[in-house]
Length: 289
Ligand code: MN
Image (tube, rainbow, N blue to C red; front, side):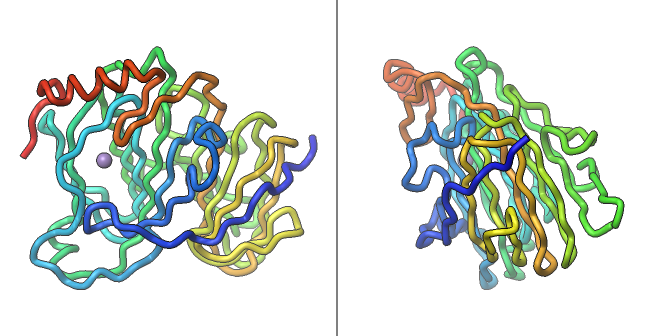
């Protein structure tokens, strides 16, 4: 096995707001072609940011999704969501919400009321994971993964704890069900912790330093809020924590199908995008106020 070399190290790009509650840096696709990260279509990162108290919760009002999954990982703060099928819930610190929008839902995402009232640090990742063409029109579903449900790998020296959200690491299987091969981990490392990761060469692989400072492949120092994209030229990479760190690791089998994306819809053809708008305007995504 050989090492995956580093293709790019990215500082956080200037933030933009999604609604008025998510102040995000876009790392995926960034300036790359959407296919470069397949099956990951998008990653918005709300780096740790203090939101002052607000009586009116900040967030994103009602909007649709079709053709993919949204994965929300809460590091700080809490998000409340409601959808057009009557589902609602709160994503607490440490939780993951894996929402399969598939054939289509309407939802809204807001700072949870009490968090909003008290204000506080907010830190979140939202990932969009593509669905294979055959699954794009399957029924919507949720996987509400609370932190205590997440399976963990603990290193022998106890310096590394890996939350395996999806996929597997050294025999520990993640609880999230996926439609294609996806590995998604939070690697929580104490200073001097070292860990090796192995994924197939063709899997598109990247990482984001959520907290701390790490050395990758013994060559590249990467600080908080920075992102690495790996080349598809090997199977392994190594992380050494230079201080206590949290690293989000993503790797997935590319879905080799055409992408037609417009706003909240990601399909395979332009005709399917037009159909999505028609269905949305015809009320087929349900209603939500
Ligand atoms: Mn959404």
